[in-house]
Image 1: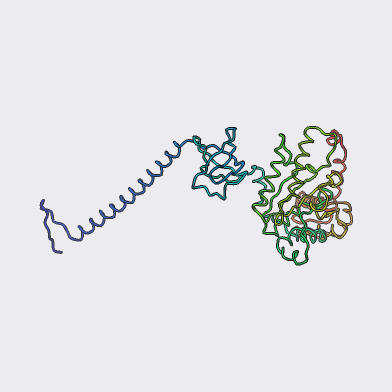
Image 2: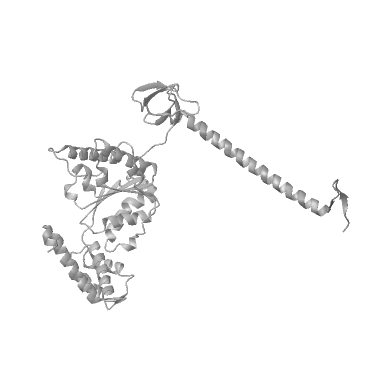
Length: 393
């Protein structure tokens, strides 16, 4: 290979080697330039962050009245109310009574509007992941399933059908029945089969310590339901907040009554609840306030009784479909479990499986179910005995 271009120091360089070094230097230059741009962007970001941290804090306020586009009455978090102006960057449509806004600390002018906030318990009530319970997992409640689907699902899926008939769709449904008969299970199945937002709360969670907190929680609950519409709002153990009002009441009872009155107002208020359906469940419909049970609030009351012989057999088949059974007469088991609830039958199946494991078997026989029933009846007798020392005798 010929050598050319002798440098001033007398070294010979190959042209290909020089070209390679040039390419390496150009790659390094491009890398350094990109690194410089990255560092400059980081410096700009940090400068903005420092500037933001040095900026004075903003006050929070609530709009009380909009006089005109240049004058707005705002109640500030500092205490008094002020007549202020709004920044041109704030849309006039967003300025309405009750809206939360941020105020400049010096001029008290409205800088920007703030999003609606809800009680953390209300935000946590939304069911994000749908339950895995389906209608096929509920045995012996075909009539109740049909009624709850007509009341809750159909108005959300086919609202035009009710307009053609000329009637208003039902607002809500009350599931009433003994414990363990499948009321909450029905609500879970509705949540699974509908595309609506499902919000679940318990009546006792609506009762708060301080005056007005329970009523505010109810308002936030319905406001969230309307915002997320179409929505199904499920209130479990309704009797905790919906008990009949008494003339003689303590301060705690009066606070529960305030929460109940707010619940009544939200269910039958001026604003329609077309896309919000209410499901409630209770074990004690006899103690509920009559105002809560009247048509217009709960238009349909569905009784969920103890299962009969046919229903018990269906429930046993559902709970044993994944069990390894040998010579088990489920019909005979259903006959011997008269008065048992669906939850009781689930426990019977679990106990039968535990007896099989105790005997080092990987399958369940009929005697396992017989012993499970005896054990459950014995435990039920203990539960009915009130003195605690008898439990541990």
